[in-house]
Length: 302
Image 1 (cartoon, one colour):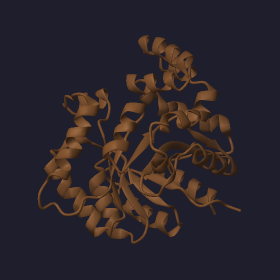
Image 2 (spheres, helix red, strand yellow):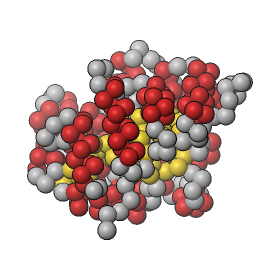
Image 3 (spheres, rainbow, N blue to C red):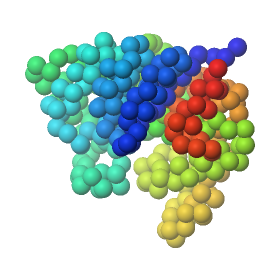
């Protein structure tokens, strides 16, 4: 029996936006649980467009960096999307990462204090309308605990499945098991019978993330200190091939999904068993672009 279909991550690049909205409609027709828009492009605009083209699928941003607009503008936009989607929308926020903020010309402060202040300011905006649930992007325990204190949920990106129980231990039992608190994870996914090709795709994709100090520190905490230390040495030489060579198969299997359709579906169930309520697959393909990757994912659940 094919298990229920997970959620997916979606981005819309220039020149492909109409095609992505068509794809969003197809994702809803196919019965996938939700569509979560990434920070790769303007996620709130994409969420609004999807809300207007769909009727039932859950929606969200995963994530919007809090430094890109003032809280007042975010409150107006998030409340608008929530209202016109009839409450299907979740507002996923986070602090992003220093290299990305540097490229945007943004200087971040202290993540925990900044997120707390942002959420307080967002909820204090007058005449915005009813805000959607606020979901905090988190990797390590202090941000997860803050999500439990002030948020309506939390979401991982590129988390380690083996470390989920430890990470989620700072939440209450009601938050971990109930329906009122969102616990999601964005997982890079490649459906491909050629596992070597699928792993090669992930190694190319994950080089961006292993280049970030915050991610490496998290993965060290999750038990991959040897791999991350080796990656740091390879990064110092600017040797991309050496960096990808340091990504062990064990680590890759813990933070991504790859392989046959059956293996990917089994992996989704394993993520559920680890404590993640909403699985958000981030599709890539060994044979083509985003459209091809989504077709492979759709086929995997037929």
